[in-house]
Image 1: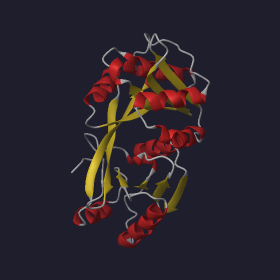
Image 2 (image 1 turned 45 degrees about the vertical axis):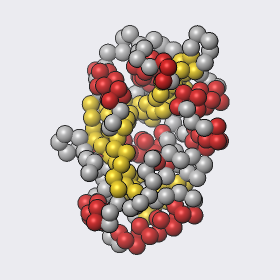
Image 3 (image 1 turned 180 degrees about the horizontal axis):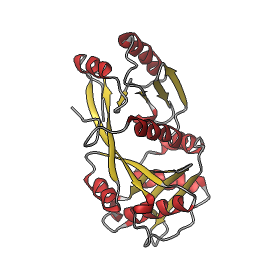
Image 4 (image 1 turned 30 degrees about the horizontal axis):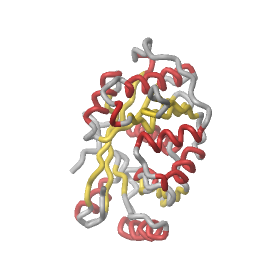
Length: 263
């Protein structure tokens, strides 16, 4: 069973703030609230974060079975498998219900935070973000090895971001994109998303260079706290962010119905 918290109980106030920032930084096509359960759906793009039920209050545990049925109907209508995203805000009664009903746990991820003033970003290069969103879109698809049919969906997600966004791309000497990172400056919060380095360009310091450059940019824009998330089995990513000075804030995982594909 995946864990859902960092060492020591995370502050629920901090978790709520970061969850809200995450919703704004990576927006779903539609969000329906069933009480404090945020039902996020994006038929055009398959990312789990954009297609999951996100409970946001540990005390909101009324009528669990009926509400799961209602959520499933919404997901079926959108052509998606019902998923729950289980963070420290998930009601214990809901977790017990999912456990007892045989729901699978997968996709554990770690949310990291850092005081930007405490990070050593002096060696980070002040690069100007690219202004061409379509160029970043193409670079992201290429570096992540995403199929061409995901282009329209990712374009919709990127175009829907409301806080100021900065796009960073590293290219090979031949002009081919080999690394990408997206920085979201949301008041005093700096979110770093979509970080990826092409397989052939890894272990060359490109990832840490991109993240440090993106953080330095947000610092210039007034951000004071950085946040990002990485899958718990991504040893290289975990090491990179810890080396930069990030600390674990909390964890979350996804829950899928018995027999549902989780790949």
